[in-house]
Image 1 (spheres, each protein chain N blue to C red):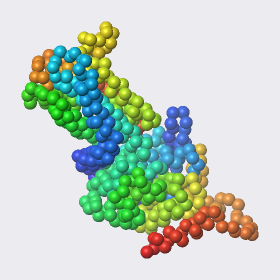
Image 2 (image 1 turned 135 degrees about the vertical axis):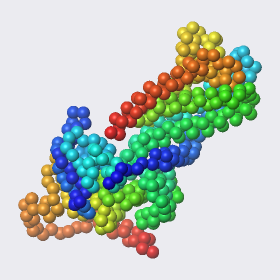
Image 3 (image 1 turned 90 degrees about the horizontal axis):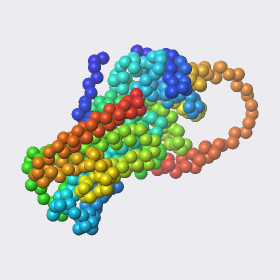
Length: 256
Length: 256
């Protein structure tokens, strides 16, 4: 008996195909992850926007980064949900008892999260373009934006994985994402932090969303980003590493 | 190699509870082996150890000649698990479920394999419907069909008929018998004595973490006082009445 060949990429594509089907066959997911952020964007631009002083004349430009982060935060809650359902239904055990590359069972969900969030981000940017979003950013700046968003998605996805693997009920799965969706509201995403009262302002300016939003905003506006991009990257990477280690620990405990 | 499974002094504890306290048994190749026990006796724990989902604390187990702890990949290559809850993907269709497993087992003619199994298990008409719309019996049939892909030498069925109606239960029994006739070894756990009596070549009774009795049905019967001859009027059981009424209608439909 020789060694058993595993087929990482082939298994990975099966897992990815499977959970992408879950995404596209669930109206609920599509509505929440793309239509809700778009509704927020419409609401803020056409209802509240007139009263918000940001110091720029194009509020869509100002708002877009925060909307993208909200979309990703609500998108990853479905990753947690899908993981949770897989654990519950016993399909994890079926996969784990098969001669496949085991890591693909988890990575399939992570990759699906990246792909599906990328799709909703693109849709939201297209809608923003219709609403008057314009960017003078060059290719490199756009690549930097894509990189930050991908890192942010990965970081939150691993947090979602912890929730999906460790919660005992469906309610717990969705509850963990509310603070993540709420975080952009107490940041520079919608209004400049300078308008906030002292303690709130201190929180807003030192939480990860503000630096990420600012970095993306400057990049899209073609302005120098300064320190913000490094702070943003440090936050994303830091959260990513901690969440990944913790998620893998939970995963091993659950499946060993 | 004569033995499909060999377990020696298997021990497993969860926190402070000792679930398996030294379990020994052997399963001959080609046999149907039934592990009998009440709820919580540790049947599922044994299945999980043998299918490489769980590591034992002590003792050894070999499956198809491979040690489950040191050669899990080889074990997975030659087995298939049908867990306690139908491990099917609810959002995919029946056909997609089968093709998914065929791809994960790296078979070539995946569609053909799926079509054959759909036909064999009477699921052709429902092939392109989502599994969420299947009845419990249909799910179980699909679950079993998924386990047969790749022709594993040994199939684990963990309480395959729990929660099924009498008709569906008899269907599952038929499938298990057919499997054994084709040379596949079947390891099944059950809490229904009748099921073991109907199917098993070898029976082992698991009680409080140990195998307290084992052998063929005839051997087990010898352990107890000889049968007394009593004359009682045999009334049909409700199950027999139910099957007689329902069976007539089903047969005419099935045997077209």
